[in-house]
Image 1 (cartoon, rainbow, N blue to C red):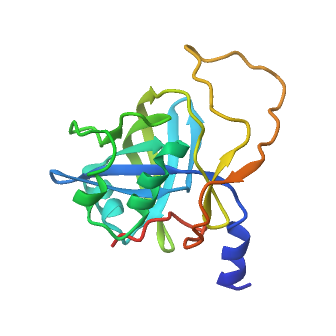
Image 2 (cartoon, helix red, strand yellow; image 1 turned 90 degrees about the vertical axis):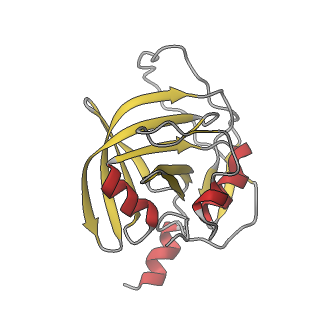
Length: 199
């Protein structure tokens, strides 16, 4: 089993795109990440896996706060910005950010923003597995989610998500799979881990 084969397989796993943010002292930090998922509804918890050598991971470990901001297709420029080698000040120069410490920075027009406290962190190889308690969720306007597949950003053909005013009852029937339409041919990153190149 080789690392190249593993990465090639993981590139075929489609994922939603998020920006994970925190505070490094009084400075906002963040990165583009796809390795984020729900863990539990009672209590509300999620998991984020990010490179433990990066600034954002170290800041989360110190501040114990993070926000997970779900991106829509109009946020592709932000996703690329937070995945690149720009400094934190340049990253946050784009987008409408709510910078209200002690809560981690929130993207005001995100599909959804999960405001969290760290429950615990576990080092696993090159990455940290962060289990976070979700303290609040902000639902943004309905929009088409940004996806990441095979080293490029994509969009689902089903169109925008819906934002119900209250949790819907169990529908009991599975939703159809979404076909993908390319947004950008950027093939520079691996689906194995978060997209960011920060240090």
